[in-house]
Image 1 (cartoon, one colour):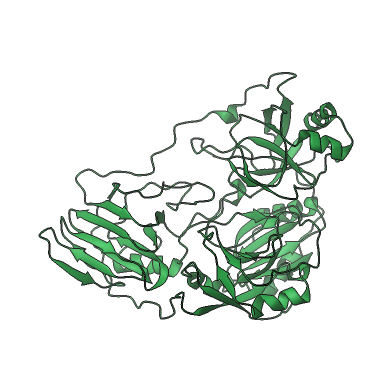
Image 2: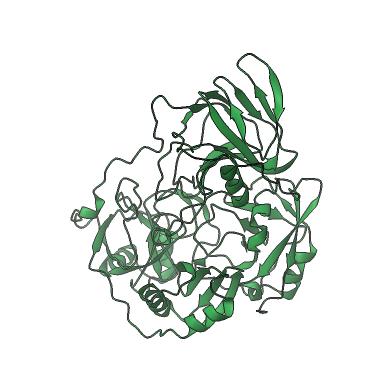
Amino acid sequence: MRFLPVNLDAMLVELDDLPQTLALLASLQAEPIDGIEELVPAARTLLVRHRPEKLSHAALVERIGARSLTAQVERAATLIEIPVDYTGEDLDEVAQMLGLSRDEVIRRHTASEYTVAFTGFAPGFAYLSGGDPNLNVPRRTTPRTRIPAGAVGLAGPFSGVYPQASPGGWQIIGVTATPMWDLGREVPALLQPGFRVRFIDMASRPARPSAALATQPPAASVTVEPHGAALEIRSTGLQALFQDTGRTGQAGQGVSASGAVDQGALRAANRLVGNASDMACVEIAYGGFEFVCRGEAVVAFTGADAPLVITSAGGASWSAPGYQAIALSDGDSLMLGKPHAGMRSYLAVRGGFAIAPVLGSCSTDTLARVGPAAIATGDVLPIRTVVRGAIVGLHEQPPADLPTMDETITLDVVMGPRTDWFTPEAVALLSSQVWKVTPQSNRVGLRLAGEQPLTRANAAELPSEGTTLGALQVPPSGQPVLFMADHPLTGGYPVIGAVASYHLDLAGQVPIGASLRFNPIHPFGTP
């Protein structure tokens, strides 16, 4: 095993191959180590996220290193058959690369029984191993900007099915109408780790129906409580989403945690109105949010430094403070203006919003498309009945270091896990150069632009591996992407470093157009 740093609370265990990875995963699942919070398996790595206060890095390395990798992982009894129309746009190119006919590619793809090795990239996306070893083709040199849902593809030794329309670089050989991801199912992801999978050529014979495909209507995301208070939305600004502390424990379905980008601000807002600190708030990007209170409510705004103006039903207006509880009467309206510093604000309401969780969380994952819909103008957000005895908190201290576009923000960085895939000049350039946050940035990632790109020393194709919040992934352009809350669970580009966990809330408040510097807290390979 090779242990690679990922962040202060995460490491990557690199192994020789997929069987070793699955053996280690099975061992850690059968006999868990107290302090490990999440395991994300990939082609030949296992991402381990842990609680440093519970288990030190050295102790974790020692305990994982003692595990045996010789066990054979048994496959599940469940067999899923997937009918495929083999008319993919890359089928001819794949056949040419392999020196085979179209029919022979199809025959080999349908002749093998696959196993779901691991999940990632998108909810319901399964990496299928065990196919014909000759069907080994590289990803496309230039990924497509959109691949339709149901596309069946090849990449390296794996086969897979895109659960939803998305960008991607796999070689597409066919398409299926079988849904890989359906929130109406008790378990939304059709393909679970360990399941057996067989592809059926629709041109030769029909597939047998699978009981696993039965669906039920999805539950509503908003639960209205009659006669209760509510917030009527007049304006949402650039983006307004429900967010809480995220949905952990869903890696087996290819779902990352998502959640509030500034977790500290979310918890502070909830404390101010007397809620549990992990309850859902409204996350608002760049202000411009306005609502009218129907009934009486207590609210609080935290996060960005933005003006708040209350207008009563009678027309009187006055300014309100952030980081304090605010009592509103029926007919009062509240307007959140453009931030002076920071970019994301958090609105909490006493009692919490009456919304139903999806996979255990009320967070909206914009990449995975899981969770409540984005809040729209005209929406009425019902408020839950206040629990007797809920105590409204005193004012909270706002952060003193909210970033602006007029300064260069420095973020501490943990180098790894793939720092050694870059030239020494690129490693030095990461910290010596100023990086601009481009307008293409969002909750998935901050896309950065530097005067000089980061060049790789290792041009090999990296097998997909787990990624974390704060990771600095470097695509072929050499311009890094800083992964935010809605990042994919796994990725195929090398990560040169990651923003230290204690600076993640600060990173979540960096506005578009701002300048960043990265400060490595120790050289790569230093414990």
